[in-house]
Image (cartoon, rainbow, N blue to C red; front, side, top):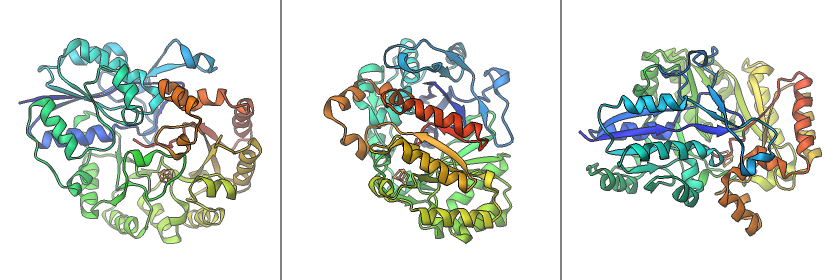
Length: 452
Ligand code: SF4
C-alpha cells in the first residue's frame, strides 16, 4: 500500500495563537487519499493536543482556544526593523524528528501545506528536513505556495508547487508523482470533500466550511486566487458531517467560510435542523460575517444554534473607503445587523467588529473615527492591520519596483513589517494601547484578508 505523509509545518511570526487553527485543505487531501486506498500519516506541527506536545500548552479555554509552544528565532533581513520577538510556533523540532523516526513505512509521496505568505520559514524548515530523510516527491500547496509560487519554487525543496484548490489536474499530478491511480471526480465531489479529523488522536475543536468562495471582490482580499466562484454545499451532507462531530464529542466548531451568510436562506435551513438535532456545539466565526445578511431571523437562529463570539466585518465606517474597497457593507446594514444580534440575545461583549487600519488612501484620522464609531456602540473592536498581499486588486496597483521587492521577500508582506514603512506606525501602535486602556477589550490581529 502506498504511503502518503502529510505535514502541516510550523508558523514563524511575531504572534500566533490557536484560534481553532486546522489545516483544512490538507485534511481534505487526507480524506481523498484514504478514499483511494493510500495509507495516510499526518504530522501537524500546529497541533497543541498532539500526544508529544509540551503538556503546559495542551490547556484550552472553554472555547477550545490556547497558546502555542514557541521558540524565539533570531531576526534577520526585513524583520530586524520590527520591535517584537520573532518566534517559531508549534511542536518542538525534535518532536518532529521523533515522529519521523517512528514512521514504520517510508513515504512514497509527501504533501505539505503553507499558511500566510510571510510565515514561509516553517515550510522551508519542514521541506529541508524531509528532503534530507526521504527521496519521496514533495507537493507543496496552500496560501504561500499559491500567492508566492516562484519564491516557493526557489526556496523550498518541494518538487511540485500546487496553486489554488484541488481539482482533476491535481489528481493527475498525484497519480504521476506517487505512481497511483486515482480516478477523476466531478466538481461536486471535490466541493463535498470534508477533512479527515480521524487523524487526530485528540481533538477539542474542528474547522468546517459550508460554502466555498465568495461572491464579493474586496480590493484587499486574495480569495479569487483560491476559488473563482461561490458554492453552497449540500445541506444533508453538512448535517451528516456535523453528526460525526457530535458523536466524537466535539464542542467547538469554527467556520472557515468566507461568505457563510450569503443568500441566507441556505444557512437558515441548516441552523433550523441543527437546533432540532440539539447538537449543543459552540459555533465560532473567526472570519467576519456579512452584515447585510444578518437579518432578525438569521440572528435568532444563530443564537439558538449556539453561535458564541460573533465577528462582523465592517472594515471602515467611511463611505468612500467602503466604495473603494468593494462595497460589501454600509453603515446602515451594519447597524441593523448589530440591532438584530442584540435583539436575538447576543451581549455587546459577544459581538466583535473587524476594522482595517492602513488601507491605501486611509488616514489615521479615518481609523480613529472608526474606533470612536464602534465605541459609541459599545462593541468589541478588532483592528486588523493592512498589508499588501499578492493576488489582490490592491497589489496590482503597487509600483512595479516595490511589487518586485514584496515578491522577492514575502516577509515584507507581514503587517508588522509593513507598518514600519508607514509613517503612522507609532500612532497605530498608540491606538492599540489606547483602545486597550479604555477597557474595551480591543485587539489588533492579523488581517485575515486571505483565507486557508
Ligand atoms: S474580504 Fe470577505 S467579502 Fe471581501 S472578497 Fe474577501 S472573503 Fe469576500
